[in-house]
Length: 351
Ligand code: KG4
Ligand code: ZN
Image (cartoon, rainbow, N blue to C red; front, top):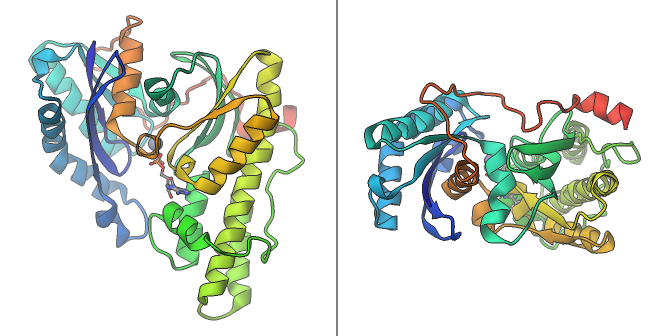
């Protein structure tokens, strides 16, 4: 089974071809970072126009890299949400057009399910597993029980972890996108110099909050009064990174307990999304997994950030179970993986 996957929900125009023997035949990712850098963040209108301009050539490149034509495909998958709707529409319409012209089925993929299932493309990870999804738009803990079957244990009540990295980078004058720049700046920094909060620490449940941490970074910058020197930037980046790492660890620890109550034999903790590329966070989570008698599994960094292979793979997992979608399937700006999950504040209060 061979699937083309198209991803256009944020600031990467991406297309990939994967098969059910878990071979990635092509994985083309065109980043729009340079177009958004000027504005210090992703501008939806700019993103949508850029997807429109580049989607055709990115898809053609993926087919060429795979040395295949559309007739070799079993189905065409695309992200149909959640995400910036202008971009989502471009990818979804491209996929539907290819499906119509080639007479192949179309599979609508939830971007979050793409992140959730990627690990099964690269590793032998059976269901159920616990997933920490940490990206620029999301910060969630989910039990993945099967394709299309997710139990959300916690989510953020305000900012996502990646968003906090991006805003901190801006305050430190490091530029965009923030995550990798904060990580680089933190090398050799004194993570104990600034006493930043660990949001939600000691609270039951496993919801997240990052806006208070962001405010504390801003106050620390203001207190320093004047242009930040190299030392202060390094120490503040390190202190912030440690605060995020410890927060992710304490909340995930609660989630492990909740997951084991439901599935006593659950073995794998999977971390996915752009923030999963952070080494310090990876090390902290590996320690937590070991202490909890679980193994941490992290897809390769290139598969943690947005890409087409994750959409092709999620499409393949859905298609081989018999799912495909009509060509009038509507793009969705919001599309929770677990529609029955209680809202964040309620989940936190209840647990
Ligand atoms: O999954 P992703 O590519 O896109 C979304 O779906 O959001 O994640 C992008 C996010 C950005 O906020 C970026 O700053 C963050 O992931 N990120 C990192 C690192 N690399 C990317 N955060 C911390 N450390 C990193 N090394
Ligand atoms: Zn993503």
